[in-house]
Image (cartoon, rainbow over all chains, first blue to last red; front, side, top):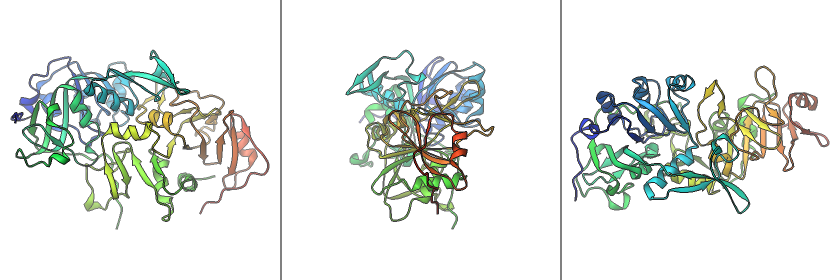
Amino acid sequence: MINKVVKDADEAVKDIPDNAILMLGGFGLCGIPENCISALLKTGVKGLTCISNNAGVDDFGIGLMLKTRQVKKMISSYVGENAEFERQLLAGELEVDLIPQGTLAERVRAGGAGIPAFFTPAGYGTEVAEGKEVREFDGKKYLMESWLQADFALVKAWKGDSAGNLVFKGTARNFNPMMATAGKITIAEVEELVPLGTLDPNEIHTPGIYVQRIFEGKNYEKRIEQRTVTNR
Amino acid sequence: MLDKIGIAKRIAQEVRGGWYINLGIGIPTLVANYIPDNIDVVLQSENGLLGIGPFPYDEDVDADLINAGKQTVSMMPGSVLFNSAESFAMIRGGHVDLTILGAMEVSENGDIANWKIPGKMVKGMGGAMDLVASAENIIVAMQHCSKSGASKLLKSCSLPITGIKCVKKIVTDMAVLDILPEGGFRLLERAPGVSVEDIKAATEGKLIVEGDIPEMTIN
């Protein structure tokens, strides 16, 4: 098997250049590549385009890279938890492309699957449709949406092996599997790097063919945005 | 007038056994608490979970298990986890039987606005545009009027819309209404203590009142 293990996040992201297009997995703060984000804060790379469902919160996740002004453009579906994001957007300091969540997921999936465009009903008749081709199929109108691809995809998994095979846990899966397929270079950080051959091939979510670099992350904070509990 | 819990309780009465249901953030999430135990449904969360359970006990909280509102949740027996593309395949593919979501405005032809206030609030549409463009059965939970008393049930939406001609039913703090295929809000029920005249005064869009309008029954 091909060994894709790199030492740590610093080594994994060191060649990400200014103005790169990145994909970052996660939904809210769930399943985000925490170690890679920390490493990018250190390299200080600038002018990034970040494709990510959300923009983190003010003091965690992509929010940290917004504060340091490393992000030129965000492509997201929901950014409501980040006041700094909203401020930069309303002040015209940040380019933002807001797209429907299912369209975002499918555009990334299409990018990884070699499908340059597809038709979806989401956004028809709204400002999302501006400038897009509309076609009717069986009496209903659909928008043409194009694929998304990235220079680097940064994904976070629960377990992985040296071949880059990945297993996700809970709802931390979200956008990570599609993004893993749509990066020219996909960097996977995992909570546990397990010996080759110990993952059950029946239960691998992301085949290693999509992953170029993998490392075991450290000090996962896994911050919770809304801690809701049932009292006994 | 109904409070938020009253709206959630009334919407829960619309739920039928065997349905897969997507609940939006806010009042829609509360609906889950009032679905009777003898009605079996499966709740879908667009971040990749079918079979949302109650909020977990404190010691069971798992940062890797949240709903679309980023709240920690548990899973029901038989739950399944999947990625976001698969989740929206379920939604766009028409496999979800009922979508319940909030709105800032609804128009008399069924347009809904709930994602943006130009110049003021830009949160994004999240999954709302996919949901409203695809669902056959959409119930909106909302306040009938703004805090300043302006109607939110309009001839046409003033805010950027989320989807066109998609809302079928609305439950507000004042009334239950459906939207007729040819346009117009048809009044079905009044909230306790609310008169037809009150509802007429609070509805800017075309209101259709046929015969006696019963008061809602809320337990």
